[in-house]
Image (cartoon, rainbow, N blue to C red; front, side, top):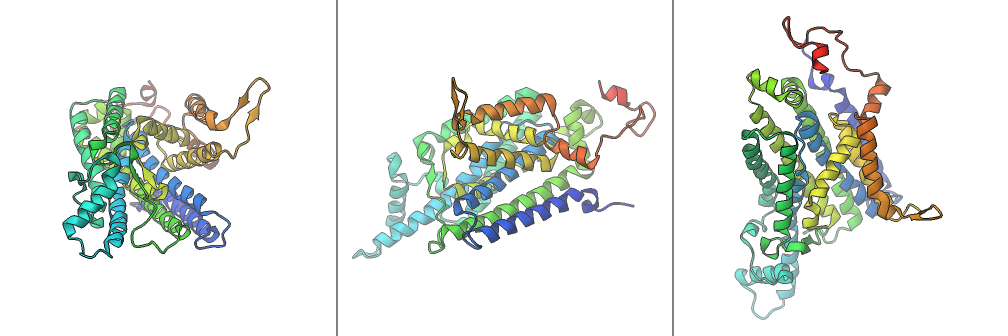
Length: 410
């Protein structure tokens, strides 16, 4: 009897239930809609953490299941943030400029209003004209479409060029890192059209909701982030289940054998790479309005390396492991770098965790890689008694002579 998707993936319901309970508890305890035990700033931190969990799922889908170690997924994350940030900054500035010109003796023309908006936004980089990439910045629906299209199109083009050339392994990782570095260096330029090193700021001010306090807006974004994370988890679980999931795992374990069996390896990898880029872009579009600012430093290659570390610590090849790793490292980072942890005096030297946190993170990654390659998610396997199938040398394929257990271990 054929099992349903939920029957084959009980972790989906468990995850959604935990996510829903978490969102409800935070909402009840928040300042904006609850009893005020959780501050607005911490609600924003939790909302941003959910967005980082979503991009970690995308990374795990690409690396943990398809074997594509991308060191450039934070580029897609940042592009999603830039796309929504353009509309937020345009609409907010339009309201400010329109209000300032409302009492003028002669009402401004649309061209004059647009020129004043451009001067307000780009005066910091010595320009008074809108770059071509801002052509849709006035339209929220079009910018939301670009949140999906821009990261997806970049991933589609890059992936098609890389996968058709059969670039794999460390060489593919280097290429994705080079792509991220090139994009970050381009965005640092003032003539990039995105205000260079200044980036886009004031993104926490939602146009049309000026009268709504930030305590309420932070809860709204928490809900949106939770909904996106839940949907992303369901989509990722659906992708990795069934025949498609078996094929991409096969590509991860032995790409040449899967190609020999007649599957379009490049097509499968391109689909996963593009899908995960879109998911990362959506996560970024939800993250940066909560952060309030985005600049090219957010897209630096080190951010994508951190992303891989989160997934490795949480447990590669386990969607819930990616969520656990991203949430744990993100919250610990906030705790250590926020000055809440007292310094550790050693007599001859005082350890300041603000400076030593990244060293601790790197050491944790090394220890997990050496002694717990399954990550934190592997602990759940021990608790639930989940083990790899014990075939005792049986055929791994449908016919005699198929790959056997001893051969698979080599």
